[in-house]
Length: 97
Image 1 (tube, rainbow, N blue to C red):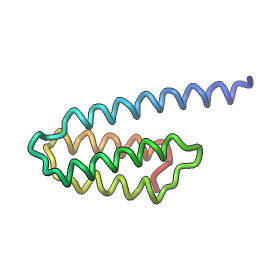
Image 2 (cartoon, rainbow, N blue to C red):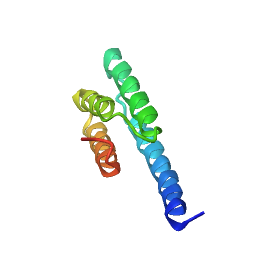
Image 3 (spheres, rainbow, N blue to C red):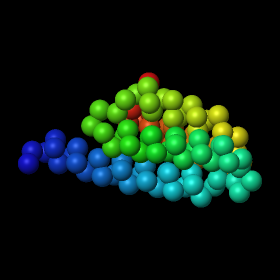
């Protein structure tokens, strides 16, 4: 295996682990009193992000829509901070336009 492929595989596993941690962090700070519709939107947005970022070529439009949904959800400052960290992570991957 050449060095580029090895590095790429290592980066993908690091990215997957970091994404998984950010999503776990996000779920951990969901306010208990969050409206049901917002919880459903959060769940759908997270699922979309996870499934698209697992693809070799994520569909930017779907990722962008999911990000906008997450950003529109009103939550605690802690919730907003984790959403912002998730958005920054996705932007660093280049999966968000």
